[in-house]
Image 1 (tube, helix red, strand yellow):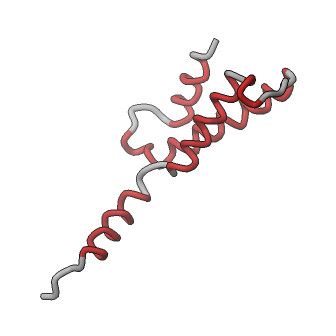
Image 2 (tube, one colour; image 1 turned 45 degrees about the horizontal axis):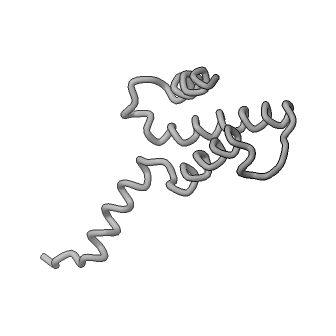
Image 3 (cartoon, one colour; image 1 turned 90 degrees about the vertical axis):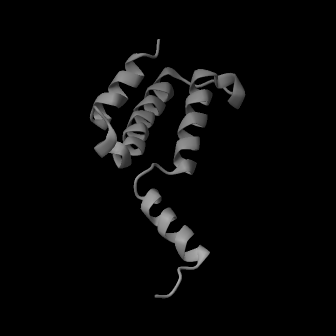
Length: 90
């Protein structure tokens, strides 16, 4: 029996985990967009109410997309968790 190389071992782990977790880059973008939405001064520009509504709608969709890979481990559906999250915003 041929011994598995370290690269093969890491590849097998990465392959199994990548399918079960949201993209780190997409997660980072979601958090960054949320910060810019809540604190628009960071972007150094004013945004209209309509633009805020559009951004919120996009963020709701993105959060749901981020949660979908975790769905089998969640107690609630991604749609429900997304709604709960955004309902907590003032």
